[in-house]
Structure formats: structure tokens, C-alpha cells
Image 1 (tube, rainbow, N blue to C red):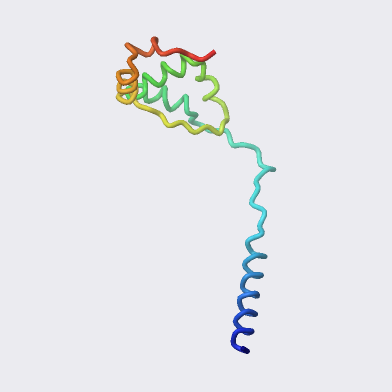
Image 2: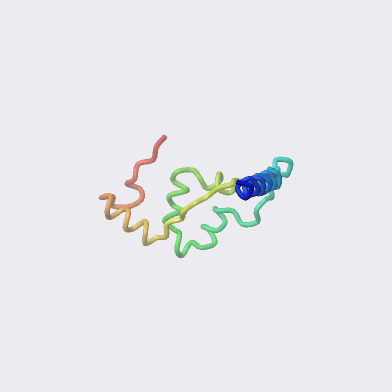
Length: 102
């Protein structure tokens, strides 16, 4: 019984210690966003050989200027082969045939 009491006391001390240490304020709300040197749009323009279809789609959707902003943005950028596969599977002749939501 004394062993169980010691074990529970040890567990309680460890639990409280871990709880106190883990209560750290990690919010960085007071920092200004860092301006990125290379935006998503800059990357796409610089790599037009592989992403010309993505650039055309971004231009068609009027998103180039948005993606030049400070974000944060996450873009899963399909390359030209992925766009070609999408257009073929969706039955579109080309990118101009894809409707744009207003």
C-alpha cells in the first residue's frame, strides 16, 4: 500500500511538472509578417517552362496579384502535365473552356 502511495505521489509530481512546463505562450501575435522575396506568383513566373498552364489559370482567375501579396498562401502547384491530364479527364479542349466562377 505504501508503494502504491509513493507511486501515485511520484506520478502526481511528474504530471504537475510537465503541465507547468508545457504551459508556454508560443503566440507570435506581436510580430509583423516578414515580406517574402519570392512570392508564389514570382515562383510560377520564374518557372514558366513547367508551370505555364498554372500561370494562365491564375491569370484567368485574376489571382496573380493576390498571390504576389504577403499571404500566407499554400499552393499545391500542378505542373503542365497535371493540367493536361485534368483537361483530358474533365473533357475540356483547353484551359479557356474551363468555366470561371464569378
